[in-house]
Image (cartoon, rainbow, N blue to C red; front, top):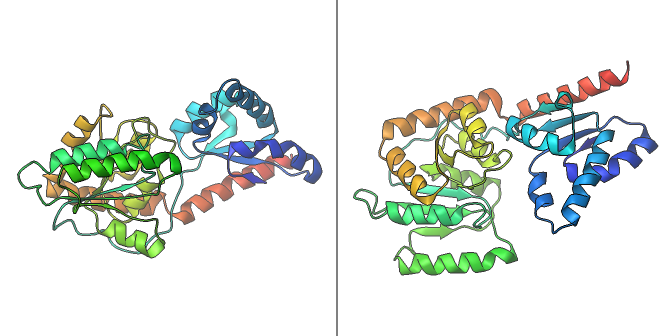
Length: 292
């Protein structure tokens, strides 16, 4: 039996008892939700999860960084953790051509926690440089009710900077529109200062041959290093992001190299089929242990 998140592990003990099944649990960004709880509920939930984790035969973390971060907090033996990177379907397209006007993309919640404000600041500075006056920014990923004041504030900032026509807030979209979004980009950046457990947008960008520009935080160094399809910067500030974007976008040859390399390594390690096969291997291992 697979639990897609450790947040569901309260079900593990009763289902295991009733069905007699082995249990595998995926790990990805659960700590973000748990640590956001008010005291004492945050610690109560962590203690509950540590107890529930005893019922799990194997964990499948999306990155080594997250496995090393989260497993100790569950008091889980590292030997019970496997690494199964997330994957996406192959769009079936060759690497896109780098050329034309500069278009920077963002794919995440429109929030400060995801770095939307840093990207906007870096973009507005970039447009002031010779050769970047026609650069555009496309942001998508949706927003919650809590994000609306943040978005309104930055829409006003965009207007005051005279950039209303070059910054686009796109609605959530279907698979075909998503493909068009990636094919329109020169680079993608989701500059989350704290990083996250994986960053599926990194794999989507690699699949489309779009280089990424990410802070050296969370699992980003691990995933960008594996795809080879982008660059890292530090510290995780708007100033450092501006410098990274400026340098990369001024180097067409490097953009083309990163585009091709990201696409190549996506096909070798991050397709949905590869993820499915790795997950099946974990199931087979757990099942075999259960027969001993």
